Length: 114
Length: 111
Image 1 (cartoon, rainbow over the protein chains, first blue to last red):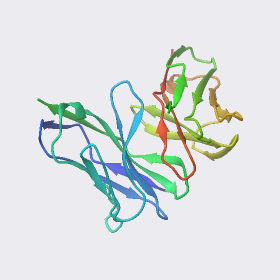
Image 2: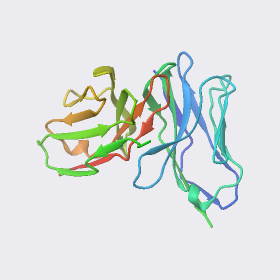
Image 3: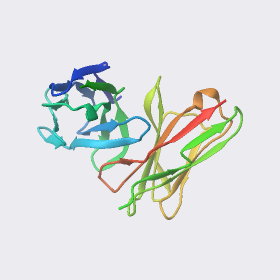
Image 4: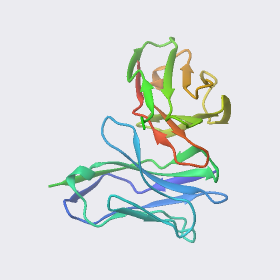
């Protein structure tokens, strides 16, 4: 079945460091891909998305490119801030036009130190 | 535009009881999905409702059920609660072919 695998955390970085969180997926068809972020005690917030191969999603300095050839959707940010400390989830939707079911990775905790 | 709201935010129940959680989607959204989040299993899809009909279902026992009303508000019910049902229950709404937007969740503790 469809699945998402994220790199193990926690990831600890100093402020202004470069961030990469790896995400690979297994899916039939052409899923849409998402990154969500969860701050302590809160629900999930959409960070960015990409709906087809070679699309680049971006938001708040974060970027991810939908790579069909490597089945990957790695999250990057050039300079992290303490406020970026959170849990990041990679997810896929199982089919275009019907995004009612998301498959999530296990989440990666990011801690940014001043 | 108001976001997804969930009530209550926190619940404490004992084993064997049942519980009902409520979710109000973003205005205009007709799809509501439910997820269970636990430290051990992560985020798992429970079910999705669209126009009052269950459209997708995850791999959970029949103790977990849901429904959707004509105004798109949704409820999920868990009967005969078990300790393992302790979790954060998240609701998300979306318009057709669009992104899911999540509520803050209901934290259920089963004692």
